[in-house]
Each structure stands twice: as structure tokens, then as C-alpha cells.
Image (cartoon, rainbow, N blue to C red; front, top):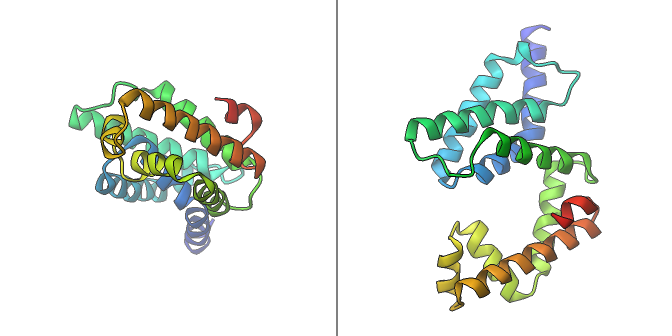
Length: 182
């Protein structure tokens, strides 16, 4: 493939997968600056290794594979790896992302838009705990303090909120029945 065609193909594939990659990295790393750094590094590595990519196969899993290795290297270097971050966990997270990718919705943006709609449709109490936990990156204990809940009540509300989100996403065809149950 000529350099111009390779560059064009890469730009298209990156445009189609950049939001997915950002969400994937955010699911593994809390610090926004680190997510940005890892995203950029993944793009550089992907560009350098584009000739190794089988463009007849999906680009997203290949790109997430690069990103997961970078995340593991980042945590090894920092010596702060979360207890649950293991290659098997990365594999499960990647499978969930691939399942989402295979479901209805033309683009990752469509799927993110469906998630936003589902979050907006939550009752205020559920929306608040979801926002605190996942958008403000607070621990469950910090969310409990913010909303004057016991830790157990907060955990239960988070669990119910996630279940409501899963049901909404399932009704929109963005989440399969087996994923909604997990």
C-alpha cells in the first residue's frame, strides 16, 4: 500500500475508533492526563506498526491490544497497578467492547449518545450517583459522603442505577441480554 493510501486508511480507522479507544483507556486508568498520554502513545505505536495490521480484520481490537500493553507498561513503571488489573481482566474488558461494537448503532458515537440518553432518563438520585462515580471519578465512599448516604446504601444505589442503565441500553439495542444481566 502506498504511503498516501496507508495514511488515509489510518486516518479513517483512527477517526472511527478514537472515541472507543478513549473510553477503553478511561475504563482502565483514572487520571485524565495519563489517558491522553496513553491515547497519543497508542496512536504513534499503531502508526509505526500499521504494516503489521491485517486490515481485513477489525481495527478496534488491534488498537485496544496496543493500548492494553501500554496500560500494563504504565502501571509497571509506576508500580501502582490496581489489584484487579491483569491481562485476563483486560481480555474481558476488550470482549465487552467488541460485543458493544457488534451491536446496533452505526458508530461508537451513536452508542455513546444512547448511553447519554439513558443516563439523562435516570431518576435524579440514580443519575447523581452515576455521575459522581463515573464522571467525577469518586470512590463509592466519596459518593456516599457527597450524597449523605451510608456506604452500603450508596453501593446498592449504584448497583440499581447500573441495572437501570443496562435495561435502557438493552431496550435501545446497544447492549445484549447477556451483558445486561452481568
